[in-house]
Amino acid sequence: MPQNYTIELFRTARHWAPRYELYWMDNRADWEELNFVSALVRREGEIILINTGLPKDYSQVDQFWRSWDERTNTTVAPGEHVIDQLSRRGVEPRDVTSVLVTPLTVYATGNLDLFPNATLGFSKRGWIDFQTPDKYSHQLPRHIVMPDHVHTHLTSAAWDRLRLLGEEEQVTDGIRAKWVGTHHRSSMAFIIQTSAGRVAITDCVFKYPNIEQPRPLGIQESMEECLRAYDWLRQQADVIVPLYDPEIFKRHQNGRIG
Image (cartoon, rainbow, N blue to C red; front, side, top):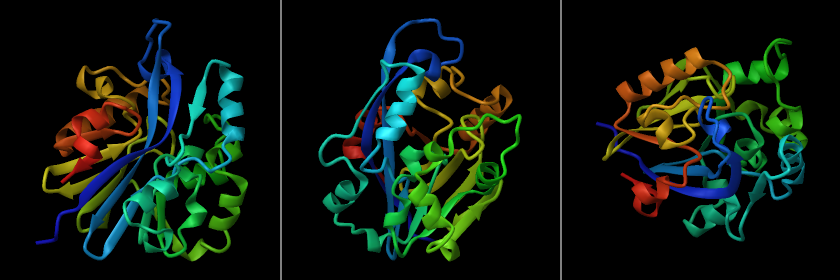
């Protein structure tokens, strides 16, 4: 019987967004706080990081979001950078054995070049979409998907450590990955076995009301994918972690699961 994982969730940035990005066809003018959340997933011999946070210089992505609406605001508080958060938990970048990413966007990919010994896993479909985009598919600017220096790192020094994840596959004997789409072509769900049951971590759910009420995601690429993904998550997971909801830290004391 494989040992269960433990999960520690932590915030790497705060971001404020209009409600219509969170909830489909929402007509209220309110704005809500989002958190960009990473997860440290551990058991004996394995230290796995889900999402690497914004790079230290995140001015380009902040400018990009402000070009949509100047009221958008993103902040990384002192000590919230992913390396600081890991250090607080006794983990150095060289200790991380694997990094998993969802989606391929700068708040998840921004520090992929800092983990010299880790396997780097993300959606194969998303990688193909990034490298050879369909002209009819929504595309973010390439530097918003990942910083240029990170892309150079992935296609040179880290090339033999890339792991492109298929539609559904076992990452380890306690972690399963599934492509869920909805938010981006690279959006995944990771199902992790813990003492608290099967925990799903995904970006296709922004906040708990998305899946609990349910209220489909506002900033999405496919309603069909959204409804299918939410149904699958309810069937497969005992605990669902929406990667952007500050409520996470109220439901899970100190961000710990398992």
